[in-house]
Every structure is written in structure tokens, then in C-alpha cells.
Amino acid sequence: MARSTTTLEVRRTERLTPHMIRVVAGGEELSAFPDTPYTDRYVKLLFPRPGVPYPEPFDMSVIRAELPREQWPVMRTYTVRALDHAAGELTIDFVHHGDVGLAGPWAAAARPGDVLRLVGPGGAYAPDPEADWHLMVGDESALPAIGAACERVPAGAPVVAVLEVADVAEQQELRCPGALRVTWLHRRPDAPQQLLDAVRALEFPPGRVHAFVHGEAGFVRAVRRHLVDERGVAREMLSVSGYWRRGVDEDGWQAEKAAERAGAAR
Image 1 (cartoon, rainbow, N blue to C red):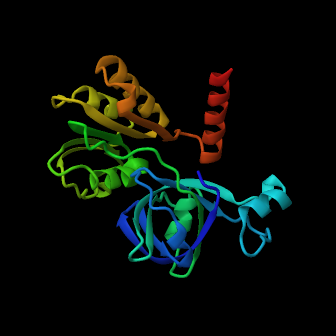
Image 2 (cartoon, rainbow, N blue to C red):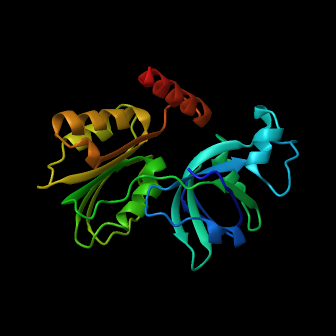
């Protein structure tokens, strides 16, 4: 990921569902933000720590060089839902659960003119136009990337989506030029494996599938294992990522992933 910082201003916000907030930002620096081909392109949002004076102009390289680590801005990872250079707008959707977390409460309180700083973008996935059909599996955290991916599939291409959200009020309309079939699942404490069970129950269309499986790390790992071991999906046709882990904040989850990578490298 490029490490340059982009500073934008909030233009408007929209409550898409009771727990999903859309923030649209813009500004002069957006013109230099890369329009990559990926639909899962992500950025690191930078949240200043209270009481810490940061250099102006804001520069993360200077901050890292001159301030102790505990004073660096807090980073949170989010998918770019849409980028429109012609309109000068970048859109990010935030899951909001009241006062829990950092980015969600910020989005709920955001007003036009508020500053939004970010680093990126990264990303590695876009729907393969040569695939015979597409499988997209995720929870609320993956909805922005899945929504962007649905808009990018070739016209008429079959798309099967299995999506878990809190309840019917959290369902979103997904625009798709392909032949989209969505199964919405409502989260149930007595059915922690319902996403996996729903994927297992699918009758796969014929041909080569390109699969996108993102969201909570537990179900992502289980669905990946099912697709590879039981369905015979080639690894190169899988985009799989645990965005978060139940009971752990992003700092803890990133530390866990770093430890897992270090262990695998030994």
C-alpha cells in the first residue's frame, strides 16, 4: 500500500440502514487518489489521539519519525464503497453499533466540513470477467466490498450471494448487471454456523467459480475450508480475508494476524 496521506472533508452522510452509515467525502487531494481496478480496495482511516498536537501539514512520515508510537493516530481499515473522480467524491460505509468502537461513532457524529484522513488504497480482488459465475459470502463488514463487486460483474453473469446481517432492516438493495441471487440470513445466537451451512446447501451453477469470502474470521476460515476441500475450488479463484474476529478490536485482530504470519514464516 502506498503510504501517502490523503486529507478530505466530509460532504454529506446518509443512514442506509439502522446500523450502516454512508460518509461521502471530497477535496482537492482526492484528485491524486489512485483509481485502482480493485473492488475490495481498502484504506486506513487515521483518527487523531486526543490532546496530541500533530504537524501541519499532516504527514505520517513526520509523525512516525518525531512522535512516540503511542501518540500516532489510531488506524482503522475500511473499504472504499465508491470513487467518483468526476464528482470529486469518495464513499465509505460504516457499521455503527452505538458508542462501541471508534470509526462507527465518528461516522454517526460526522458533519459536512469534518476532516477525514486516510492512507491507501490497497486491494487485490475484482470479479474475474472470465469466470463462469461468482460466489460472494460475507457479513455487514463485507457489504461495501460485495456491493462494489456486484456492480462490476459482466452483464448476465450468474452471481450467488450469501449475506448475514442482524435483521431484515439491515438488508440493502444491491445493484448488479449480472443475474444476482441473494440469500439473506439474519443473525441468530443459536445458529452460529448458519453462513457455512447455507453455503454447504447451495447447488453450485456449472462452470468455474470466482469466490469472494470476507467478514468475521471464524466463518471465513470455515467457508474457505469447505470451498477448497469439499467443493474443489482452486485457491487462485478465491479471495478470502478475515476483516475482524469476534471479541477482539482491530488492534488486537491485526496483532493476531501478524503473529500468525510470523509463525507461518518460521
